Image 1 (cartoon, rainbow, N blue to C red):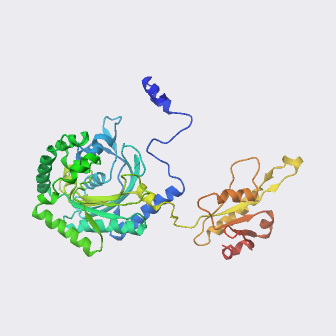
Image 2: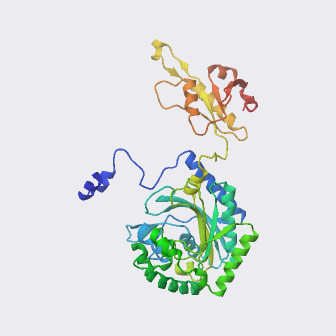
Image 3: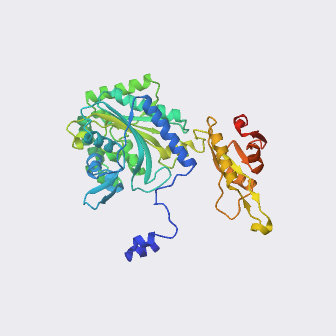
Length: 457
C-alpha cells in the first residue's frame, strides 16, 4: 500500500530509500559459506574446462540491446518479458546480459577472431532476468558456461556434453542426474517440423493456454516448452521431430548418440526438448536433477546446444558454427547443501589476554598494551609461515573494555569455519617468547616456544 501511494504521488525513489536498506528483490548477498560454495563450484568448472584446452573470456555485463534482441528472438520470453533494459544518457538502448552465449559471439566478432578458428572459451559471471524469483531462480544469477566455436562436426557436441557431465560428477552433487537429449535438426528440418506442428496445434487451438495460443504462429516450437497442465496433455500427442529430420540431421544426431554410448554417458531421448532460445539447432540437451533440494520445476542444472550461424545474425562477416552450455551456480549450490567446500583450513586466530586495570585507575577496564598487540601480530605471522595455515589477531568490536579470552573464544567458535586450533598470548607469554596453543576439538592446550609453533598445530 505504501509503495502504491508513493507511485501515485510520484515519489517512488524517496519511498524506496528507507532508513533500513535492503537488497533488490530477486538479488541476494552471498556471505561466508554461500560465497565459498559459489567459488568452489566455479573453480571446479574452470579446472575441467582448462583440462579440455579451453581459455577464459570475460565480456561486459552491459551490451547494446540489439545483441540480445537479434539473437534470442523477438518472440522469446527473455526478450518479451525478462530483459533489464534501459535508455542511457546517450540515448542508446542498453541491456544487462540475460545469458552468456550472445555476448561471447559478439566479442569474437568485435575482436576480429572470426579468422582465428577454432575458439574454445569459458566464462563465468552474473546474468540478469526480470522474472518471478523462486527457489533456484533469481533475477541476478551466476552462470558458468563454455563455447566451442569453429567446427560443424558432431564430435564438438559430444565433447561439450562429456565436459559438462564430467564437471557435475567431479563436483559430487546429489540428486539423480540425467542427460536429456534431442535434436532440432538443420534449417530444412525445422521449417518442415514447424509447419507440421502448427497444423497439429491449430486443431487444438481452443484447448491451449493463452500463452501457447499466441506462440502457435509467432514461435511454434516454444509451445513444446509449456508447463501448463492442459498444454502438456496436448503436447504429449504432438508429432515427433524425427519425422521431419533431413538425412544430414539424422547422421549428425546418430553420431552424437553413438559417441555418448561409447563414452558411457547415459542419456534419455526427449523429443519435446526445444530449449528456450531461438538460435539453437541440431543437438540440444539438458542435465536434470530429481533432488527435492531444488524448487518445483527447477530441475535443470546445466543446458546447452548447437547454434551454427549465430555470429551471422549478430552482423559478423562469416557464419561461424558453435556449440556450448551454461550451468546455473545457484542451483548447483542448492544440490551441494551444507557440504564443506572450503579449499583450505580455516585461519587460526590469535587471542590476546587483556590486562585488568585498578578500579580507581580507569573504572576497572581491561586493556591490551601496544607491545602485546605487536607481539600477537608477530605470532600470527609466524603461524602463517607454517605451510597450509592462515592466521590473524582476533579484534573484538570496539568497546571501552577488551573482552576476556573466554568471550573471544566463544565468538570465534560461532563462525561456520571453526578453526582447528587457537593461539593465546598474554604478557607472560610475551615475556617468555611463548604462546598457548589450544585444540578446539579436544579442548586441550599446550604452551610452546614461538619458534616451535608448528609442533603444536
